[in-house]
Amino acid sequence: MTDRAPYAADPANHGGREFPARRGGHDTAEPGERRGPRTDFQRDRDRIIHSMSFRRLKAKTQVFIAPDGDHYRTRLTHSLEVAQIGRVLARALGLDDDLTEALCLAHDLGHPPFGHAGEAALHEAMGRHGGFCHNAQALRTVMRLESPYPGFDGLNLTWDVLEGLAKHNGPVTAPNWALAERDAEFPLDLKTWPSLEAQVAAVSDDIAYDNHDIDDGLRAGFLSLDDLLEVDFLADQWRAVERRFPGAPRDRQLRELVREQIGLMVNDVLTHTRAQVEGLGSVEEVRGAGRQLAGFSPEMAEHERTLKAFMYEKLYYHPEQVAAAERARDTVARLFVAYSQDASLMPDEWQERLPQTDPGRARTITDFIAGMTDSFAMRCCAQIYGERPRGLTNV
Image (cartoon, rainbow, N blue to C red; front, side, top):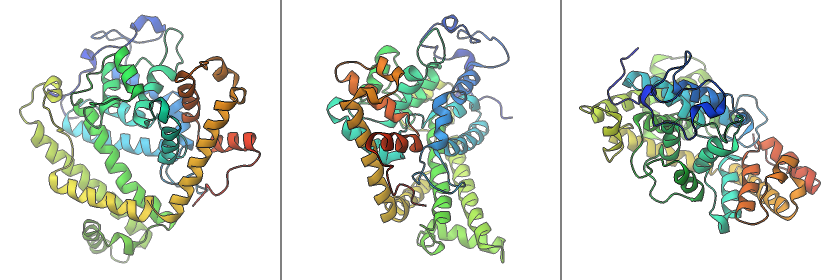
């Protein structure tokens, strides 16, 4: 294993936890103290894996809404694939791979049902009350909503994990209400760049969905080889695959194309990031660098932007996808209206915690809906309105 780099986050010297370690009554440690076989970042990862919010990702949309097929990715399998790429990058760079893995596994915990379509519906419904953002909702989830311990709300993750979730895409200069509330209660230094582990988690997410969405799009028939060959970067890799595996079944060649691209992107990130961090001696210097250090080279970044534009045109904005997204948005919007008008439609435990006035009331209703799986949201809509939403399965 690669030696720990001087600019890596240190689980024995992390930024602490919001609540004192002993309040939870479970195996944890104060900063600098080691109890049991796990580091604090390993404990954080395990708390995320054992959370109900993580388990529910198995039935939340990644690309296709409520797909019939068993082989399409969900938010859960996507998160696992992000974590696999993240660990590879972190180990090769000498970073803390447990912190990286925890961030990769938790980055989508705030996603509502039906992916970005559900997020758009909740943002519109919450327009008068500060809107909705899945990144901020992930932080709200691990800090307040997911509460298995008797001594405090939330999972009581280390500052380093919370910081990485809050700003894995970079500094936050205008936090929405959810992020601002959490930052006020446990300051996360929002205006600086995060650790390299958080930056690696972000680029791992890009690598995973850029390429695995191609795989799912091909399986669904929304993308074809001819489509892929319109992108020079993909065409170059396809020709290389054909030369290496002439006569192989087409489906295996296409899967090899996806693997080849992931490898190219991973190696590019390693080369570029090593050059960017040369001479840095601490994680504090990473946060104070004032720029992104872990990511694609300028050339690969341009390829990646071209690939994203292609995927939006051919897959994400495919007419069938757009139609399904509109039906999904309508389902979420109708749920919000129903619960706002009649709170008795919500489970007892949610009624008990529901404030009487806004914005707290609307935000709690949003918390309930955001935690739903695709299938549960459709069942709730059917129970309230008398019919199951139609046309949401588009593959």
